[in-house]
Amino acid sequence: MADQAIRNLPEGKEYHVFLAYASENQEDADKLAGVLKGLGFKLMLYDRDFRIGGDPIQEIPEKMEKSMRMVLLLTKESNKKNWPMYEAMQSLRKMIDENTRFTIVLRKGVQRTEVPKFIRWVPDVDYNNENWLKLLTDAITDSTPLEIGLQGNDVGFGMAYGYFYSYLNIIIPPQGEEGKQLDLKGRIEKYLQTKSGVTYMPLKIYILVPESGILPSNIANVDKKIELRDKDKDKLKTTVIRGGTPRPYMNMIRTIEDDSGVYQCLVEYATVIQPLTEMEDNPLLNFKEEDRILQVNIFFKTLEDIIRSFDADKRAMVELIKLSEDEESPLSTILLDRIKADMKK
Image (cartoon, rainbow, N blue to C red):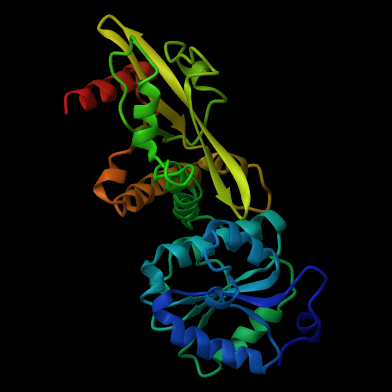
């Protein structure tokens, strides 16, 4: 049933199918893997093929690069789980970047209308269809050119998951050498021990999300009152081991001064949404200005919801700020209002 060209893995590929699923669906995943294995397909299963103690954020793209296709087993459980949705988002990024077929959704107990909008445009197979296996293997072996229609689909949803797992969920939890690990709050407190003359600095990071989706090249270009006074000392740096490789993360500390004092804060734009403006220039995508603005709003709302999954202590270390196009106040004023409100808590 499987095409010989797909069965014969090309150089660099180890799997025909990367199977994405929720841990609650392990039994269903094993059964599906057994059926596809019987047809000659080799599958990637995270419980078997991921390194014990490895970093999933690092391993997911590595295993995808070694796979010909990804099948997302979409169930009531996986539809609500962060990891399967993150894997789906990463697979879509691969499809768009490489302009190739990759992701297939296999629905089990999930209606078409319940499929997250950001993946509704990929091939979809209903497990309840009596011909589901043929439809699935045909989708796996399909070598026709990719056609993308993203208009109206929630790419902002996927960006929010990617931003959370590949960035916020790294810089906020405890990091550093064993026995000396500090979370973001702890790293800010350690920095403040070396400073004098600072009226107040919130123990959190502010993430700026412009409604337009258009990001400046530098915060200083937006408001000169937001200063980076000492580029060598006004920063937080942490190194995380990912896939056996040390990876540094740097967050710059900005200073804003007014008549009431000198204030500092961690603040940066959500740079992950930058591709939304670039997508308008891609003739392959039917993506317009109104789509960009819609996806920014979806990104913001989804990221808010994801952050709520943090425990209370971690949740307090990040604050999202949506910047309206109609906002007349300078960015420094917006930030000072937030900083002073935090100081009163």
